[in-house]
Amino acid sequence: MAFDSNVAPVIIKRKKVVVEDGHHGGAWKVAYADFVTAMMAFFMLMWLLNATTEKQRKGIADYFSPTAPISRLSSGSDGMMMGESVFANDVLPRMGVGASSLHQTQGDASGGGDASEEDTAQDKTFKEMTDVFLGLGGESMLEDRWLRHVVTRVTDEGLVLEFHDRPESPLFTDGATPTDILYEIGFAVQEASKMLNNEIAIEAHVATIPLVQREDPTWDWSSARAFQFSDILTGFGFPPDRLRRVTAYGDREPVVDNLMSPRNNRLEIIFLRY
Image (cartoon, rainbow, N blue to C red):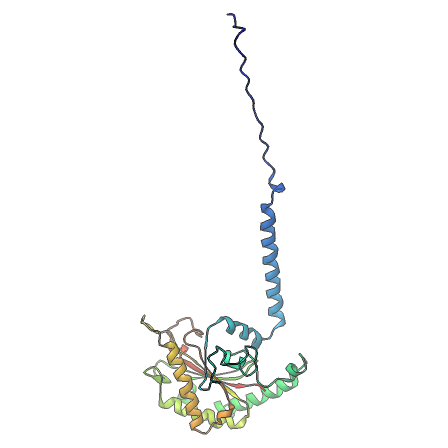
């Protein structure tokens, strides 16, 4: 068969596309930068956990955990800090448990010096008061049936006396009405406080309510309970100038997994370190 020499030849061009290797691109740099940033944040966290005290860590936690610091006094300013700087010493204690101290410890005053001797003396005094309060050395200020409501512990912040509900014996009824037991506890705390001259802080916590309501009453209840107990103390003769702060936590800091447990209804009275 003869080919027509007058027909133009068909030319097919094949273009070879070379895909750039992955390691020559820039996407991996973004991922690597994210990894380095995450590692730096992790090591910073580890360093902070090692370099801070329990009180400082609780202060940081309280910064991110909403609480309701409450006070009957106001400077007359409508600012969020009532006219004070956010870093003022007499404002910080009203902003949560681990905030600051109006009275510097020896370590604070010296820029981080050793205050272990002072802390040891404070711990000894706290233990003596606890023994008297709970009757560990003899007769207790509280009757046996009331001792079931009490938990004590010593922390970096001070001596904590925690009083909580029992299923058969609450401290408050109808939201914020004190029971007879609470009055007896208040009297015992006032009498025991004569052994110390430390200032105190009152913190109120409540359990989560079982029903979904239009308005959550837990904040109002915890605020009212804290003030009720402060009134009970001062009514029995506790000096009002020793009351550093009153704080409401609502239901934000439960102590047991069951958020509606009566155990989460509690008052914490803290005898603050100097």
